[in-house]
Image 1 (cartoon, one colour):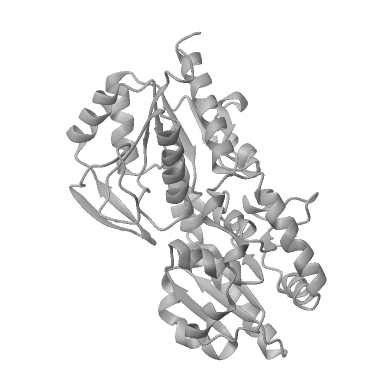
Image 2 (tube, one colour):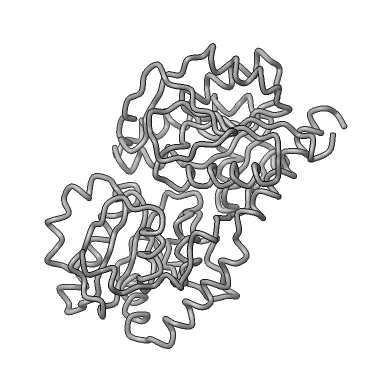
Length: 389
């Protein structure tokens, strides 16, 4: 079987959500259509932040409700027989499950019945997310146990960053050869520093001439937004007058009026050219999350020529390229360290511009085309291994 003959189904709970995982899966589905690969993505959702295409199949769920402690995601009860019929019709060489929800569990059962090898991707560190939101070690341990049981039937696992390799091999009891890395990549054509337009800020009450730090993602606890807001308020009280702009939905958005006086603006969900223009019109990107396995928004910022500030815990640090010097990896939750980095960049235009150019250069290495090609080759190698070839 050549790579051209490989047939692959990917099942995911997160295809039509406003997050990086959803965008990544939609992007690789788009590339697969361009390359005429037999690749189908199957989901079951009532959400609608997604494209329509022949290789994106949405099976209407029987029931959908918000995930406890993580309301930005839905838990769905899919119609098992319809899902099973869809997988059987496709006759895939491999079934790839990208999320450990009820849809993933149903797909796993279907694969067992049909005797199809199963692979998966560990996109989201759910135990860490749930601990941050609940502060309950019991919930964290329970989630870890569930994941261990869920992934036990998988032939192998893909990860988004090498930072998680040892941790997941130990926690989920995979052998080293069973864990593979999907290289980071985005559709860089959607982001362009040429879109920079300082007039875009006027409707948000932000001076065009002011320096701006941008955050994109869910404005929630697990993204460490509390730390970011406290950091900005302290800087403001010390006399700094730069602006913090947060794009995304979540609990903190509902409290946005509390922060207006500190030069903080919440813009809510944005997409398309509007989002790309906002990226290009900021001065730097700040992402203090300690729970992300990759942080696709960091690459989007780099492709928009923004220097990036990220935490030294989690996957985003792997994107900051020391040889390019496109940003800073900073000690998690250390306000003094983050303030010093911000003050350095905001007070030195030459350094800010040099790092902006470096960020753009570094992003050229992180295309979705490269990511998909290596992903497809790895799937083909695994399919051949399962056939004993």
